[in-house]
Amino acid sequence: MGQREGAAGLTTHAPQAAQAVTLPASLDEAVAALAAMPAAVPVAGGTDLMAAVNSGQLRPAALVGLGRISEIRGWQYQDGHALLGAGLTHARMGRPDFAALIPALAAASRAAGPPHIRNAGTLGGNIASAAPTGDALPVLAALEATLIIAGPGGTRREIPVSHLLAGMEMLRAGELIGYVRVPLLHAPQVFLKATGRTGPGRAVASVALVLDPARRGVRCAVGAIAPVPLRPLDAEQWVAQLIDWDNNRAIVPEALAAFGEYVAAACIPDPAPAEDGTVQQLPPAVLHLRRTLAALARRALGRALS
Image (cartoon, rainbow, N blue to C red; front, side, top):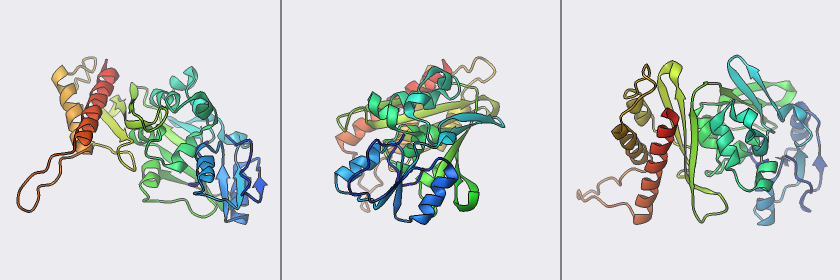
């Protein structure tokens, strides 16, 4: 999936502004089509793309449809990882067999919106669109997933998903997100989000939390409150030391509440003191968001450890 792709399976109709539509049957054919038409926009479901077209923000000269590329619409096992095709839809990832594999990503997929969005939207589109409210993004950040990028001439390169989202590494001309490599931790995973009046099912804050018993670690990522998912690393390390990994992963209830506050304060910090030493208070709406985030983080850890 390219970084201007709409979030998802192939749209059934192209916008009138598009002058050409190419429907490749393989990932390498899609890359070749993009190389031949530098102004073309890759599209799968088009949920974000069509919104941009309809609002006048985007007028693509050509489209490269990805909906016929069967190789990126499934997954396979590879060296303790799941290799997920970028064309996997939210609806497919929400099914029980996938939930047994990567529970947090399945939960995020089920929460991605109404049925028509889940049926069309794809994993690669969620990443390429990089919308702050993308439900899959904090899960992939917490899992420390990597992307396999397909390039011209059959080349492949791998980058951390967090690097792409943060703009540390970008897709080059003619490249597409082909696969997402996710480690299989075989441990509890939780995804929770709070929604508001910003749209149907759209998160105002979300938390993905996964346990890594082999390393006796906790990974947490916060979505929707910033342009990219946030990792409160100090909070992760602090709470991991309080878990009795040898005794049913027990933890005292007070630590759950403290973890929630720790995550919230790390992701939504107090304002820095002014030059005269005065300390400003966060606006009420921001304080409410911080309390919401603290509750999500506390509940996520509690559910993972229960």
